[in-house]
Each structure stands twice: as C-alpha cells, then as structure tokens.
Image (cartoon, rainbow, N blue to C red):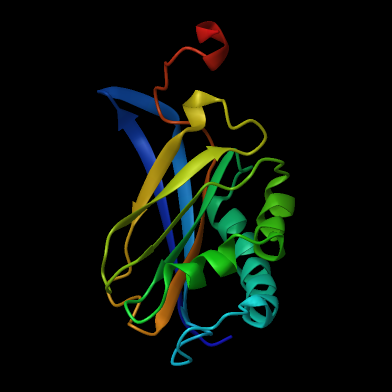
Length: 183
C-alpha cells in the first residue's frame, strides 16, 4: 500500500438554530490518499488479492486515528472511497465494503451496525459527503447526518481517497420523533 498523505479534520459545533450546543457537537474525519492498487492494470477480474493486501492495513491505520481525533466515545460513523478518474468505482468499493476494512472501525467504536458509505469516481478537489448512522441502531434518526469533506489535491487520477468519519453525538438540536412513532 502506497500512502501519499493522511488528513485529519475535526469540527466542533457550538451553536445551531441560534441556540447553544453544550457540549459542542464534535465530528472527526480521517482520510488516506493512496495509490489505487489496480492502477494501470486495465480491467482486473479478480480484485481479491488487492483487497487482501490493502483493506486490512487501511482499516487498522484509520480506525484508531479517527477515534483518537474524535476524543470521545463514537456514537455515529461512516466511511468513504473516492476513486480518481482513471480508476473504477468498484476499486473503492472493494476496499471499503469488506469486513477486513470495516471491522477495525466496528471494534474501535464498539459498534454493531453496518457502516454507511459513499463511493464514487471524481476529480481531485471534489467535495463529498460521508453519511453517518448510529453505531448500534441505524433507525435512531438523531444520528442520521453527514459530514462534508474534500481533499484539494486528491484523488489524483491513479489514487483513491479512503476515509472514516465519526461523531460523538447525533445532530445538534435534533428533534425528530423516533421511527417507532410512525408504526
């Protein structure tokens, strides 16, 4: 796995809707800009060798970093793979839609639900949203949120941006009724 750089973002929301948020609502994102392991190979029918080589290492690298950056217990989480223009969306999906990647984050966050994801092909500097859901119950509406990020110089055409996002709480000032009230 060839890593060009790792980027960490944190955000603390102190006010929402004209009201204070106390404690501030924190989100964290950690992104790795890596060389696409299938770059320059044309159509690769069997992605498994690349998955086995890269996905576990990425999960092991990113999961503790995003939990540390959050600095609080994880309540919501998500993942992303943004593939450079010379790659395939399937390349990003191959790296993040495997337990070899996601289970590192599940263990670090004490989570049980599937990780929501965004994956797409895009040029360097493209803005993308990482969706977040509650770590143990994806029906908890207050934790349905997204965090917007971008890497100014990535992904390059032969790269993939792979990331994890975490929130220490649901949306600030969340007030939607529980899903159970609609049944």
